[in-house]
Length: 149
Image (tube, rainbow, N blue to C red; front, side, top):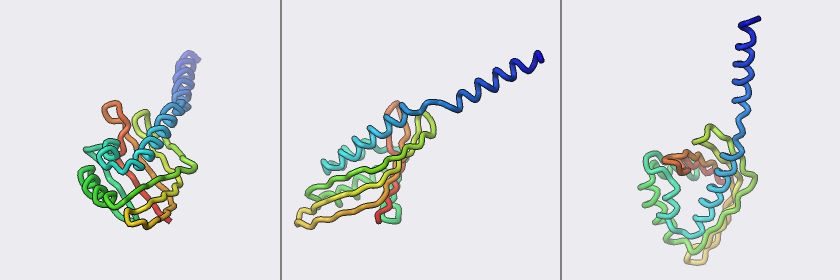
């Protein structure tokens, strides 16, 4: 009986850690995701890329790897966005999965609307998944996967 009490206390304590309240991380990730998505409206690639990890970043787009690092992202999207007049995105039903206090995944449906400088308009819908990692106390994107419909 003497050994059961410490074991029971240890068991109860370990179970309570499994019910860790991760709502603060979820709120942070939703807010940083909204901020990142709003920033795309500026069409400023350097500002957008500031949200990405420089050491480890990948962007999967339209079924393939578009960028394997942040430098390549800057080059690729500078070219793409140079022909864009305006762009906006609406996020729907975000789902945040907290991995740890420093890592989380957010997935959501989206609708993007853009107008090219030549006047061509386009609408795109689908799903986006962002993997956020807190690096040097700042949330950074390490992976983006876009699945367009």
